Amino acid sequence: MRNVVSDDKINDFRDLVNSNSNFVYQIYKDKGGKNLFNLVCSCMDWITVSVRHLENAPEFDKDIDTRCMQIYSLISSIDLIFESIKQLHRVFLNERTIPFSGEKKCFDNRLFSNEDDNNYFKTIRACFGAHPVALNQENTKRFASWPFESPFNTGDLTVHLYSREVNEDDLALHLNINELLDFLKIRYSYIDVITDKVETLFFEYQKSISKHLIEHKPVPLEQLYVLKAESEKRLNNDYY
Image (cartoon, rainbow, N blue to C red; front, side, top):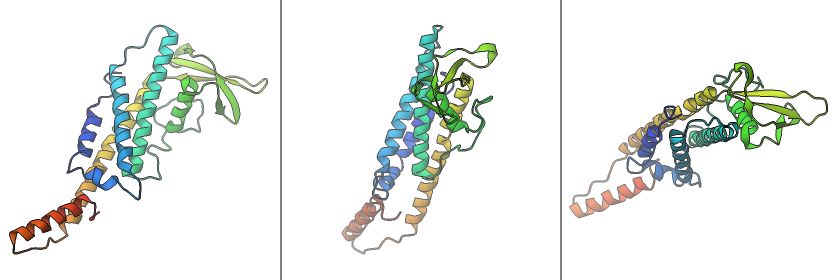
């Protein structure tokens, strides 16, 4: 997994957020009465933690129980990254939408064909460790078995989904690690889209303040006071 993601991308994004005289902080420290800058910092921190964990994760163990918990750690790390990406999307792009909604690109032979990639990942997460003994699938309560080696090259691990209903057949959910990694790479790369948006917002901010004429004073000391006041206005977000 070390070659799948690198913390270079999130480090570059963090540098962007902290650049340009702390533009992002000034704009989002009080956005509609909410400190969204704190949310941005939280997202960056947890993306960094998760990516660095994946970079340093050991190879999957031969022992099936240990491997199951390693894979659950992988799934949890992916989940942390994507949840953080979704929040950054809400802050900088659109608070009413979820990126990749409706897409079905990452998972082949999915057990629940009606679920898009986002929802199917949540199903995998639930069945392989998040809450396997309390599932809601196809309008019935189900419970996941312990994971075992997938038969006939159907995946890397499989769980049976037992039904609470009497005489209802079990379902088999197969997990393919490469598909999980594809899901991760696509979501992590979305930071590039968010980066472009932040850069556009700063460019638009520069344009807006460039249109504001600064009062000219003939006395140098008075001019310095004018410049100080204008600087404070910019830092206090008066032009955005």
